Amino acid sequence: MALPLQTERLVVREFLDDDAPRLARAFASPEVLWWDPEPFTLEKARAWIAKAREGYRTSGCGLYAVESRAAGRLIGDCGLVVQTVEGEEVVEIGWHLERTAWGHGYATEAAGAVLEYAAELGVRHVCSLIVATNERSRRVAQKLGMTIERLVAHAGLPHDLWMLDLG
Image (cartoon, rainbow, N blue to C red; front, side):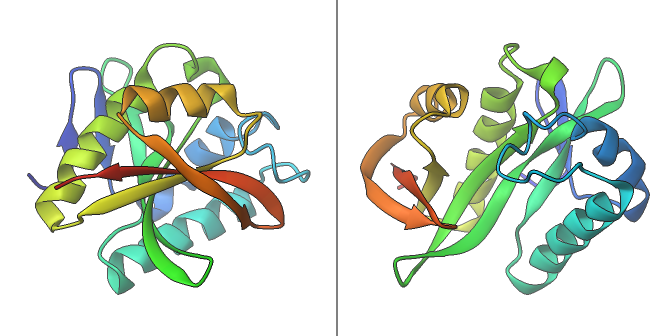
């Protein structure tokens, strides 16, 4: 399996520089990136994509663009990010979808494809850092088979550390 990943309804692919306007639109709602009080601008989108592309080069993974196959429209991201949690380097799976894409199973569908890709890359364990009040992301983690290992401090907030063994 290689990028781009194709699911029944989605394409998961590396970000391109010219995705910035579409990503800025997808993340315009403050509910999407709830931890950042500032509006998601075109400049923020460019920086987000640059960080993802740097991850592709340095760790072989990063957040990937998620597109609706039917509409050919970028609706968010999903991918693998190397994080340091309590001094330990871990691979986190994360997802962020535009507000209009919530409640359709897209996050679970994209994350399922990314987990298969992670296993093929040789990743043995993935985590997800989710605050207790983020019910939607908690449900996605549960659907993926993840379980809470412990409470950790991350980015100045308590997060549940959800884990999944990929074998």
